[in-house]
Amino acid sequence: MSDRHFDELATRFAEKIYGGAKGAIRLAVLQADLAEVLPQRPLRVLDIGAGLGHMSLWLAQQGHQVTLAEPAEPMLEGARERFAAAGQSATFIQAPWQDIESQVEGRFDLVICHAVLEWLAEPQAILPVLHRLAAADGWLSLAFYNRDALIYRNLLKGHFKKLRSQSFAGERQSLTPQQPLDPRELAAQLASHWRVESTSGVRVFHDYMPADFQARTEPADLVEMELAYRRHPAFAGLGRYLHWLCRPR
Image: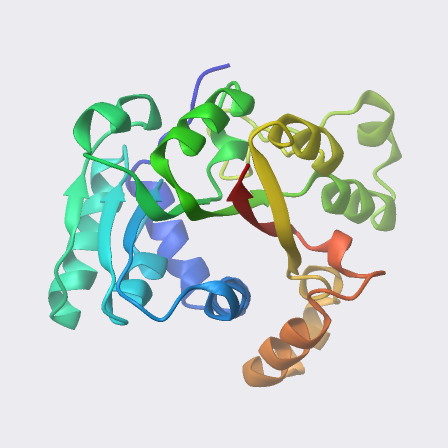
């Protein structure tokens, strides 16, 4: 298995996702979590695997100095276009995570790593790099594809053969993440360098709703309820993605 980077098809898929409820919920949860903890001053921000730049643009619009690092040229070009249309500036780096340290200077107040780990051949290998890139008093915003939620969804759908074989990875050319992460394993890998300060579920109920219920529900109501229940002790761990805000040890 090797790291997965995105092509034109994946870029169009990502644009479609962010144009619907799934993307709206994801952005709302991530932004609400960050708004609670970030200091009210301009920050140096590094967005690793920045994709189409949705999170980075939101931060740039608040006056932060943003660097976007993305290995896929189609994704990075989409981010450039989004920033230009909004009249915002940023630094754009086309590079995989392995090359980022050699292309940036200093440490960052906020390091973002959203929906990256699940596409890597060895997710744990990036963790020391994230630590070296973050300032001693900085933050890591880490969002990842939740193996527990995938198991639960397969249970609900009666896909017991898949569960018995532990076959959770998407196909090589699929747009399903190739390596969902076990939250307990990831927490153990993080423990030596990071303290997890807060955890939220992203889409704690939306993806389990029948499609006709989703279609009949107002998008604003979906977002409101996802925000309300993102940290509920019984529901947060069912989020399709988990969002952890971490501080360096």
